[in-house]
Amino acid sequence: MAMARTLESSGDRMKESSKKIAGTDASLVGHDELRSACDDFADSWDYGFGQLSKLTKGVSEFVVTAADELEKLDKKLHDELQKAGK
Image (cartoon, rainbow, N blue to C red; front, side, top):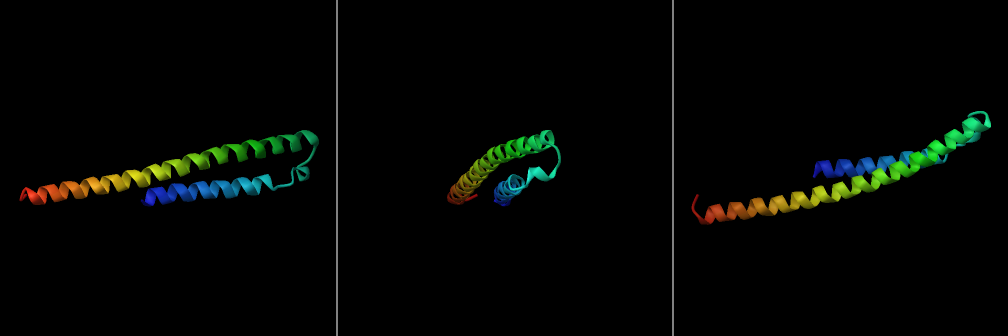
């Protein structure tokens, strides 16, 4: 479960970073080509981190579901072994 929380928190941090970069003023970096390159980078960064954030959320949900299912299976095995007297 800790891994799932870590993944989810990573996704949140990626979103925050992306918002900060998107909010920067590229006009402060210099000439037009450099400004354009910075804007392009910020756009691709925002898109890429948005996609990664979605993936980490999906993986996080999968990890939680898998952990829950393994816990159920472990309990079932324990109960069956108790019934068998082992």
